[in-house]
Length: 544
Ligand code: SGN
Ligand code: CA
Image (tube, rainbow, N blue to C red; front, side, top):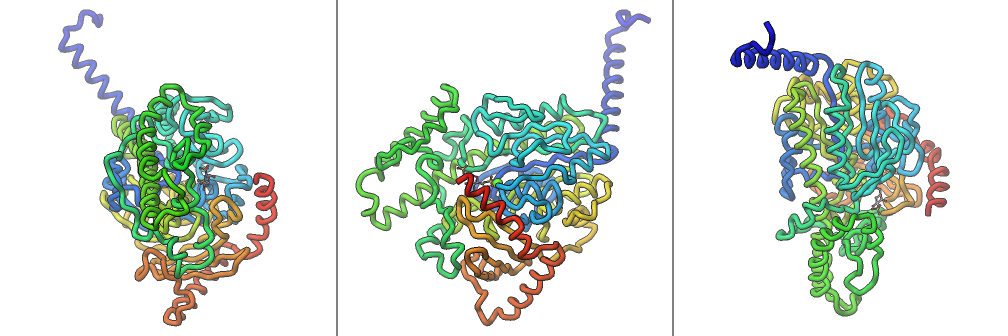
């Protein structure tokens, strides 16, 4: 019988049957077999700025979906709170002093194993889209489209499989569009995938998307209670807190950070150079949003000699700076959250939600005015911790909350575990698969931390330390030799160094013991630091 001769209802039934058969086939490929991995990373996204963490700053409904339908980790931490090193740890499953990428300056060795490489060898298709901040062509990826270095918010260049291409538009949206395009057209539907979807936002200098330039304009944000910490000279802390250079009312700049072309006291800031990258339309939108706000500030605070301002007036200005900072920061997160929503929707619409592990995290935490700061680097809680949400309907109960000390060191072994691939011996992390599924509650009770990038922008001194659920012990070294210890239960804001407090003598001895154990376990020693120091100083002095 010819098709044309078929009666309409019969034809409709036939089409419906064929569609069902097709769908069955897709489901078979996507729902069975090794799970897909969608690894979403933002840059400098503080857990305080994800509504699932309950800080009440902003709403991130799409990122929250991952936690609501899966698990949230309330004490996930990084081993080294800085961008490129964190990414190297994530890929290799090895501490910085083992994988070699101890700071943003030294080269990353792409020759060593990384988890996408191992999964690729085991039948996975792998892709990396967005920011990676590691020099050299990524290895382990069938497709890579990465920002060179930090990348630009507006009209960014990308290295597409190593070749530079300029894209017009807003970086967060482009990263999302390209991720969706890869899922739809780049993906080999016969293979499981690892897709690293890495946003640049909310990295400094927090340039929002055209549609969000005025979001939060009608709101006033209250700074954290220790925002004016600097007024006390960081009493109760040591030299490292006092000598950092990351104060919102201090190092943050009128141009680069607060987006004024001419500062309130009449000086040019050079911010117009950053706007040269914009298209005329983007520039018009930008100016229409920022000019009135900047003018209002100048009218209120621009007259007189800054040095003679009263303490009240200085505080009002600091409060304005905090508001400009936090609003721009949260605006950039709005676009990140939109993108997460689009990608999650895509998974659902294409039968991929059940068999895809979705992770949302950041390369580290960030200060949103705690201690008066922006930036990261310290082992103090806001930058030591990182947001971590994971969804995998097959194994993780919706609404799971885990307070154990997992680290970015654990990602590589965890993903290999999910994929059924052997974890190489040199990987130092642990799989948290059984912890998050509820199959086991056994977990480490202390974690190790190192930070090296000093001297450098923001001037956070070199340190290492150990943290348990309640205590933290840190050693700041190189050009000082100071120990700090905190009791997070009594002093969650870490305002009072108890290292010399006789009441804590026993805790202090135990923490020293734990630190020694961990340094031995992971193979760290003072000699390691010396190994990287000369190369760092040489590169730092050259780039200065
Ligand atoms: C840039 C930023 C710093 C930031 C470092 C490291 N300055 O230098 O504020 O600490 O990157 O950030 S900016 O003028 O470029 O905004 S990291 O995320 O790459 O580690
Ligand atoms: Ca970062």
